[in-house]
Image (cartoon, rainbow over all chains, first blue to last red; front, top):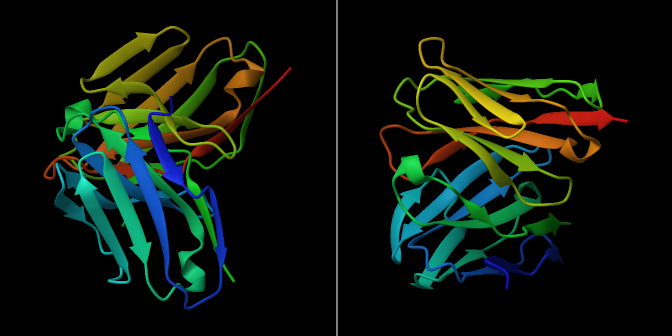
Length: 115
Length: 112
């Protein structure tokens, strides 16, 4: 069984479109994250949710809206896609908010290509 | 200003050698440090964590932390071709729980 699963794995779309990425974890973790990894491998946190509550919202454009219907799911909706949004988006989860227990379990990533 | 800096490499070592990966961080509030390994096209996976000054060993991996110098390193002994990957250094944002800052990664190639 996959611990953190996200879909789709690949997403190719035109500029201006709206798209969603879904993420689910079956580890029983309370905290979930969205990370963005650019073409130079720079991995940057976007959002963090703890028990459906938004904890971290980095300086991400308002076009990005996370939604957590329950603590096992964290979806990412992106409006009006731009070329600069092309990247790999990783969902992750951890069992504890405390940084000392910050073992992140990552999903397999979603390669988003905006044309 | 970047929070975590790594030499991007690539670093190339022969099989059986020691690979040394280095990382510096700028936030003195950081208390926890991590090394993640990422194979090409795959997701990062945690291989080492360190919280106290000094060395921490786990099999062929040794993490070293020097908070005074704000320096973290990872040594891989008896390097194997299967160790070829990008290694990401991460540090927590001391003042904000649940937030990790990653470096840009060092690409390691171990040739047979």
